[in-house]
Length: 163
Image (cartoon, rainbow, N blue to C red; front, side, top):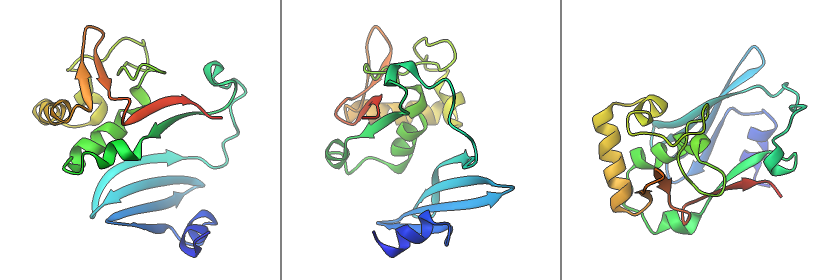
């Protein structure tokens, strides 16, 4: 294992340069971590992590008790090198809202397909910017809309249970 990855994993350092402009960062406050992913100095994704939190006693049933995952298909992403960082971050932010095995974008609460007005609230950007990004993704054939709702291309993302 690379020393810089090992140092980050063992909490010897809080910043990991992944190369090609990507940086993984971590700030710790009262035992809880705030993890960030940046691309060329711009925040792309962030989340809070509690490393002391015990695993749930009620694991997801659809994964056989193993944590669910989202698999990014690297080859599908390489085919779209002109994709903007906003569009890539848009997809990352929506990963929690992807329905199991269909890639349909759904509301986490009521499991209904996301409407166009729901997406800006989840992403945290304005409606016009959301429409621009949706247009970019549909032009690149990474996002489609049918009678069920918006779907992310399975050539880019697959959602399933850990093996």
